[in-house]
Image (cartoon, rainbow, N blue to C red; front, top):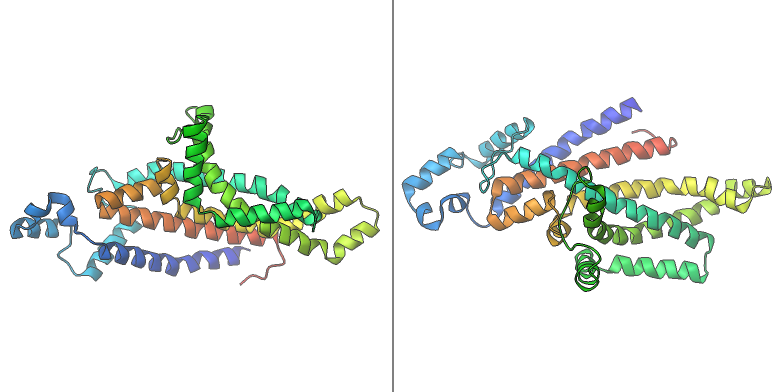
Length: 316
């Protein structure tokens, strides 16, 4: 297991290098100019002012040198300063990461709480109205765009019914009850759609396990159907479900820009959106890289978790 873990960590190095190249290149291909953002279009036309700013921010150097200097600073945890707030980007992102992780974990928790019971019951009650209802519901959930469902949640539960706040955030360490009120809508918008995928996977995994020989053996030994299903079959069926949930968490953490913007959730996603609006290129660059880094790390943890849950996996 130790060798496997070391190999997986070493494999991350080229992945992170490629990620940094993509992020750096993408930001430099965006329309607009850093100098225009700093001083405005009129002053940016002054050759002397432009030359001074280009030299100050290292933009007068070749692109590959700019990349090398940027990567060297990133490896030291230095992402530079925001062009808008003039604060350290690393400090700003560090303050925003807990909110993004909090939302992602809450969304996945809702997904699992819905999907595992629903998928298991659908498998046990195969080809019954319960099974058909679960399959149709999951198909609808997969088909509905996440941003549309989020907007509908705001309209129905906030504007029309007035049950929940439409936006905002409060740390659970300050007031956990108020924090839950702010959390319910964005977490539900994430969790319900992810539950649609997980329900189908859980049902499929359960059906696959129920057709295996050990299930027939357990029944022949006189074990009750409830014990066979929920103690043995469900335990084995949960391995792919937990793995996929981990990958979904990585996907959520890396794609919260739209949802955080809709609910005014102060996470990295919303920070990236505001940075794009303000053309704060260093913050865009750092935000996308940090989200990508988090996704890579979560994928690594999922691989290790899958190996721990299923020792039959061959180490490579």
